[in-house]
Length: 193
Image (tube, rainbow, N blue to C red; front, side, top):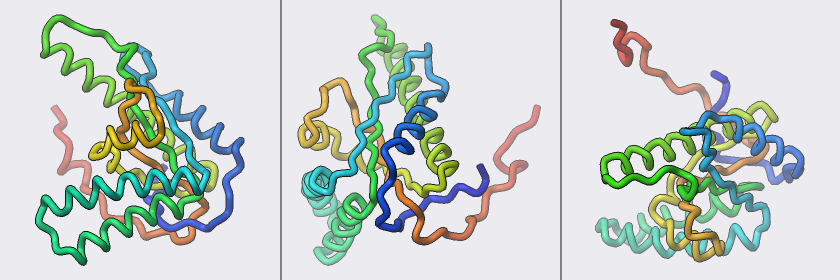
């Protein structure tokens, strides 16, 4: 598990469907609040689908960067990089949260807690997905951009309104494996009582 890295450059080699199915199956063994398993996966290997999604998301991204006041050349470079990341990965997996089977309460405090439990459950499946991909010899990276373009993604991919985009994973056989980054020491980030 300590050898997993965030891989952003991939060989063009296709990933067998059976490998993707095994990865998704392993991801579903993550723990979840009330065992509701609120994760949903959208697997994209078609160049047309990835291109359509990249183009749609680029519009939102460019709009947001303009609002941030970035220079035109920086906006163009960032939008181009994100678009290429989606298109160049052999497989992109959109991870969604489906709250339709989670509990609903009469008070807002408990509803927020229930939503947070669902988000945490989906995040657990996300890590499980990355570790399963690594175990299969694949590289992957987790991108949270879908949080900024949820409606655009739902519309572009014709997703159910209950499927809330949370993150996207780009998977493929690594073209480059980066060095390990330093980790904060356990005694700095932990409190032992």
